[in-house]
Image (cartoon, rainbow, N blue to C red; front, side, top):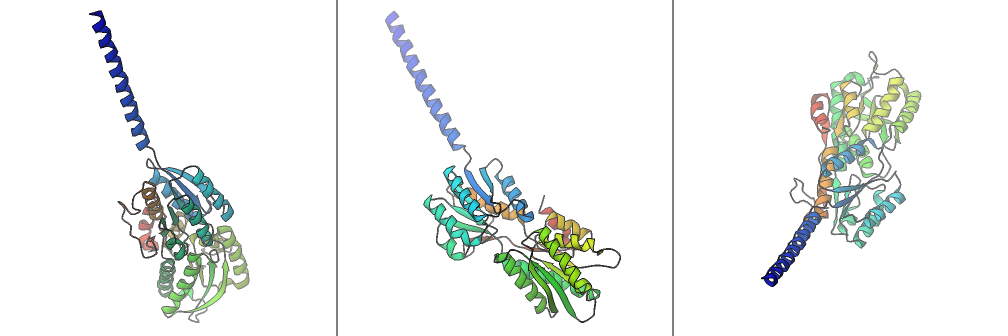
Length: 347
């Protein structure tokens, strides 16, 4: 009887150990399956007004889904290249890259391809040939020309509604233009298509100044200070490639006594960032164009997350890809008449 009891106890112990082993393996599998994928993200520079909102959107949509390896490239392509190498070495499952220099896209693709990693470029568009060269490369952004056309339409409508803005009554819109980074697709397209749209509407124009403010408020203020000193009230319209520069121009105009009494200067930007919306409500900015930071961030994260998980980039999303493998988030004109719509984009 004792021998039988001992054998029985041994069997119970063996079965218990097997059950523990099975339970441990099961728990390990579950933990591994619940791990968040690492997504490597670079922003060309954190202190860019618009990109700060795209970054926030990416972070918000990543909550509880993925671990983000976020990087400020500080407007240095060499720094960004090193960051990509580091993200790959840390086990990123996909890359989301806001290029410093769009011409460097091929270098990033080479790094991604060598690691067999998918890459989603966003906001600064690589050449279509670069995207076509790698089956795991995509782009999220906008149609650059669209923002220029819409900005031009905002200017045309406002100019026609306010004949008093033509101060000397010569029927010609004398403008200054604050351009973004030279060579940047958005800067080139906004500059061209905004003015082309104004001219196509039958309005004669005179370009008093066109210089780059590099998307920067402080630089734009310096330029506007110089232009006011040089041209004074001969300036009849301020066109800015982005709201950051428009805000810098408004700072300069405020200091020169504009927006007091009857002294007014129309300023139009692009991006519809919250500070610009406040200036529209204050009557110091005519309008802007919503560059939808929230949806650009959402689309960027969703594509990067899907491919990190081994899924189709569009799986479960509302987005579509065009012939150049790009998701295009539409622009929207913003004036005081639809300011609430633009404010909603930042909630």
